[in-house]
Image: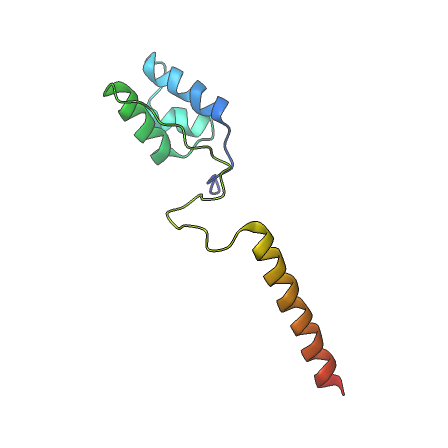
Length: 96
C-alpha cells in the first residue's frame, strides 16, 4: 500500500474510529481497512479515549506536514511562470 498522506476522507476516519471504539477492529486493522494514516488515526483514538477533544485537522489543507508555507498560491504561480520564462529565454540564447 502506498502512502496515503492527505488522500483520505474524514468520513473514513470517523468510520474507522467507530470500529475501534466498538471493539470490532484493532487500530491497525481499522486504519488499513478504511485507508487512513495509522499514526494520525492512533493519535485521534488515543485522544478520544483519553477524553481529550479529537481535533480534526482537515486532510486537504495546504499544510500537510510540519512546515509552514513560504509563499501563497498566487505568489507560487507568479514565481513558477517567471522561472519558466527565464528557462525558455536561456534555451533560446543557447540556440543562437
